Image (cartoon, rainbow, N blue to C red; front, side):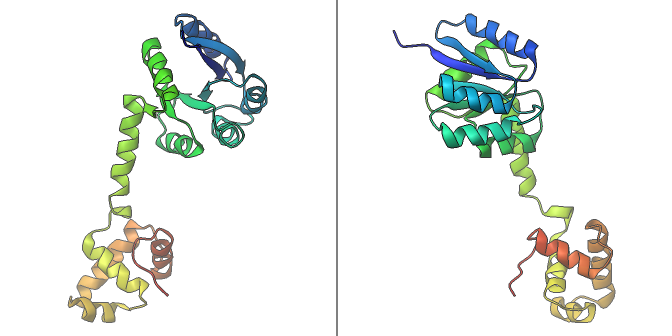
Amino acid sequence: MTAPIRIMIVDDHAMVRSGLRTFLLAFDDLEFAGEASNGNEAVRLAGTIHPDLILMDLIMPGMDGLHATYELHKHFPEIKILALTSFSDTQLILDAIEAGVSGCMLKNTSANELANAIRSVMSGNSIFSPEVTQLIMNAGDKKNHPAFNLTSRELEVLQQMVNGKNNQEISQELTLSLSTIKFHVSNILSKMNAHNRSEAISIAIKHHLVDFSH
């Protein structure tokens, strides 16, 4: 018989830790190895008890779950980390993935789903709850849309602005009337919440909205 998976619980809420300890008792292949109430404790304790997997809360006072994950990944790369969060915050989840978690589940997941997620992570997989997967997909969709909702024509005009052209020169370059260029420039400034051309150009460069090679 294979040894049970030794699990450490990290959460700043005593009730959550208690609930997770009870959850582990229901499965013969899962074993409670220890618990911590913040990231500092987690890093310290991991070096002592060497769990196979850590159930990590992401939002905690002091050292949060993201920072703790970075530290644990650096010092104990063999320990798997499965993030548990009650927050459907896309950036938080993306940051956790970057920090080195092997998966992320929402805290309202069922006991069987969580047990299966633990087993899957220990088998070398990355596992995300359906809700988390949807958040990540949505984040990818947003990245494919032009920032500030600029139209393709407005991006063309913005490119010319970044290239240092004035309205008259842009009009000639794009063979559009001067009044049309002024209309596009006005829309660009409005959409980018820029007070003037220089600010619009600065924002465009900062966010890589157009090519800038000088």
